[in-house]
Image (cartoon, rainbow, N blue to C red):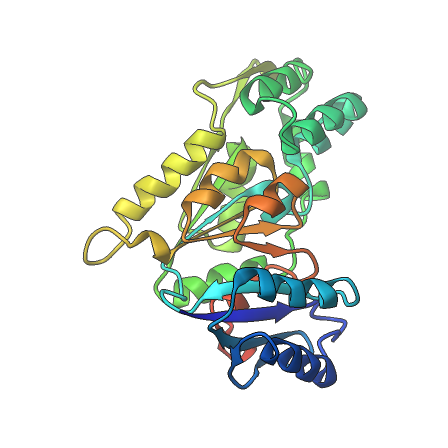
Length: 302
């Protein structure tokens, strides 16, 4: 079976030199059949076709380089490469922070809430109960603070708009599915260009947060269900093939959708997620998800 080794690095640094690419190609050639390297973006993205290789042998080669250079190495299947459905997490994926932690800063409880958030994202706490506990600590906060948080604290991750615009321009459906809050997903989805958004709804009372969230909570299983539902209705000619789907996230509550997708991507993720995902991005920005699909930089849309 033919696969593609995709190499990506930080776009602004140009760590993927021609010399490095040649060295990687030669090393891969010692354990499998290789095709000619194809540059996707000069200095930070390329791919090499490989076949007749054991996964262990390939991983051993990749591991030797991964220890020395700030480059992501990922093996993807050649078949069904360009995806028709993207499901993306929001917090620490499409945006650079966790919304609830930023809200907590205004409430004076950031240290307490961020600790719970970190443990939940590492998979040490059940997501739904952890969310209820954190939201309760926000009880009484003026809801006007949410707008302040969005304007002052929320920053898009590099490459987010390009990822969504390019996939949509090539016929894909894009969805922002978050365990965070609709106040933020509505605005982030609008600004990035997602087709659809879904998240949890904070309950308000008399202009203040009630300390509760609408049930049922959108967590790990709900994210997987969203992917399944959108896949069933996402194709112009009917249901999409599972291999035509991509999911990206960073925390434990993203695991189910990452494992369900044809290509599940861990983006600067917790170790538990990086180990389970079929692809992992630690150095590249979100445009790395386009390179995984074979897009060149010249094909990007904005």
